[in-house]
Length: 308
Image (cartoon, rainbow, N blue to C red; front, side, top):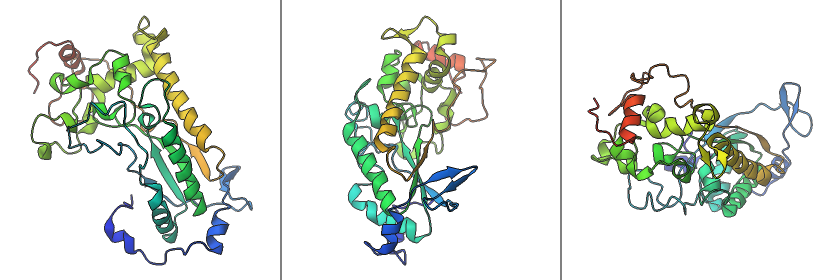
């Protein structure tokens, strides 16, 4: 994956001079399908060469994972406008990608970016920014694949994706995750943050916070049929809000001809579904303290356990 933020890339040669006839031609990019091929507006088969356009998983304010200040306080007023980069810098980045011969970007977005303020409250400023960013990409002949991204449910459970209020709606206290071992999160890590275990975020897969949320999201009707949120089953409530947030994104950018498509969810996880023995670690990943699913449930119920 290319990191467009690296300073030494700023001198990339042969950047496209704008405005130019080439850029005006790129601006007419329209991606369609024919049988199993992607084709342009002239019916020519497109050979897609692209990169992941990351940097959009964390908010512009209080988004650095090694800083605890404002982490919980910014749960509702987070802003992702300017992620992955400000619009004022878009020409530079997209120009560079085209100069390298690329014509596709996988643009990561998160549910939290769209609906962080509360259930059914959408960040129209972010949606306007996202639309303008995709339009900027079109001017440089870049097709865009929209990737609704998540890692272990949310940044409040050690990854990214869902808004923090989803935990509150199911009765989980994000401020207690560190103490109870419900999630390993850089911002709340009790030790030296510079010594935070590297690549430990996947270990949150079967810890209480992430596993509970995905179990309810996919199979709440089966595992917790009597649990309701605002008059709906937990499964229908969570899926409904996620789907409606993604519909808002689709409505914002669908009219742009360079939108190649939409993902449904990056790396969806099963939660506790399919685990046969709750008293054993359910996967090969182990980094830092690793409670079994049963121990995690007990710790979340404020019962003391010695974890190795």
